[in-house]
Amino acid sequence: MKKFIKWILSGWMVILFFIGFFLFWEYSIIFFDVPKYILPPPSQIFVKGSADLDKLIYYTGITALETVLGFTIAIVLGLGFGIAISFSSILRRTLYPFFVSIEMTPKIAFAPLFISWFGFGLLPKVIIVVLVCFFPIVLNAILAFNSLSNELTLFYQSTGASRIKTFFKIRLPAALPQCFVGFKYAGINATVGATIAEFIGSDKGLGFYISIVTGNMRPDLAFAGIFFLTCLGLSVFAFVTIMEKILMPWHISMKRLNKQ
Amino acid sequence: MAKLIQVTNLKKIFENGSETVHAFGPLSVDINIGEFVTILGPSGCGKSTLMLIIAGLLESTSGKVEFENKLVEGPKTDIGIMFQNNTLVPWRTVKGNIELQLELRKLSLEDYEDKVNDILKSVNLEDFAHRYPNELSGGMQQRAAFCQAMIHEPKIILLDEPLGKLDAMTREKIRADFQKLWMIKKPTVIFVTHSIEEAVQLSSRIILITPRPGKIDREMKIDLPYPRDLKLKRSAKFMEYVNSIEEVFHEYGVI
Image (tube, chains in turn purple, yellow):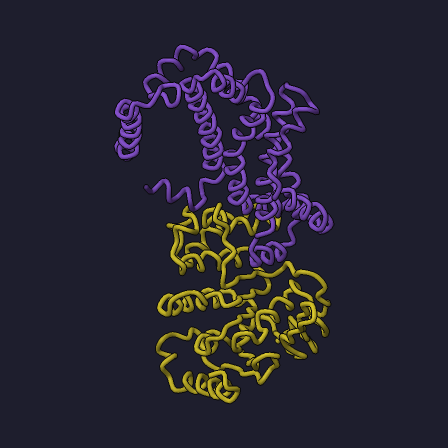
């Protein structure tokens, strides 16, 4: 409780900013006489959104499922390939340049293809989320596992420890901070991937909802959908951040956060 | 004195595409048990490289290194090693870092429990055993790294400019502490530095390396009693050693 009060006190500026932002939005619409079918005021978004809450929550669940499944698979595959590429010179000369060049293409461009191949269901969305998340994870993992300091390498060599032991005691924990850079970036992209996949072809989910209500000239409901998407994105990011805190309480960035 | 290490005609040339850098050699040197040998030379004379090759952590271009008459062909494991950039890992406490050495060597933590506490005490870190490296000053980190390199009681300790990043006062203090520790068990030490004063204060023998490609200019026995404290450092004999070494490097245009 004490912590919560402290948090409120330290966060009062940003809270005030948000309140000011929504008040500005609300009253400038009245002041400038903006039609509500172009840009609705926050109060209307809240009221109409609440009326459609059941649907919004259900759709949030759908999009969350796609996002979380895709993100999880991307982490497993990304770490797996990242470690394999880091430790194999053959893969480093074949798969790695291949991945780097694919990273340059906007993955989302593949979305219509996957929809046409796999239909309207869950699978194509998950594939697209995996595709969007995989590359930042794998590229950061390769970087992470290749950047062990020269001194630490010499140190573990001088102990005669086995490869497996050095992996778990030195290489893996040393690589975690850079891996999390990839996870965070991928986490931000995950909801983007799911939403766009739903725009292109689906019959449920927040992306579907937003595209339908926008077509029906209901920007208020579109904003309500965007609000839920934002919450979903924040949750994914918060989860990654909490995992980071649990797995690496020692990390320097954590120490700085704790001190503030 | 019994011979521990025998280096014969050792040479290292780094090849990077068409570019070749002749780091050092050929050179030959013997190191005896219980000696504190300093490899002293200007930056880039290949002294760190030489140390790594002796430890089997780097391959030579030609020549050989023998440990107790056995040819060194891969990384030596009965050594302790310490660098200018220490090998403390940020996710372990000071104690955890010392135990990392033991864990990697499959040594029992229980057997070494007392030794870990003793060594921490000997470098005045007993109150910091449960702190993380980034909570310590540079000097304390190097003390902890020293414990990490020594805990398994290796036959030989390799120190590559371990005090290089510290300020002059901390350096002086830690140097004295290292000496005290070394005097207890007198392990064989190979110490790499470019500080002449440090070399004279700590070593029983100094090997002077020329600028690249590094060759042995001369060896110098330092015939001064241990412990070499501040008083001894002000003595004429100490200064004489320092001056004669400065003279050598002055001739090479290094200083």
